[in-house]
Image (cartoon, rainbow, N blue to C red):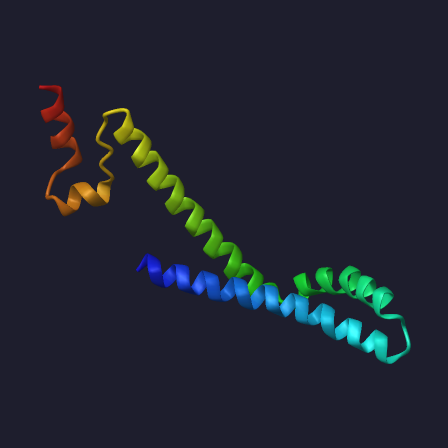
Length: 113
């Protein structure tokens, strides 16, 4: 399931970046059509288009932000698990304990004995 989330994150991020730079290209093209030099039009397109893209593509921005937050959370959890294993500890999450049929309290009491 994480592959599916990763695919949608990549798709959403690509769409978001493409949409924002397309907006810059459209603004630049309009300015060039009204006889503004290309370099000046590009600079104005960047200055106006990128902040405007934040407002126009707010829902896509929210999807990308949520996807990145979920990805960072998964990476932090995995990093904590790997560090615990390097220290020689076994880091069981509640999901892993339940899937093995072990009650966390029972596991703690067994380790103490």
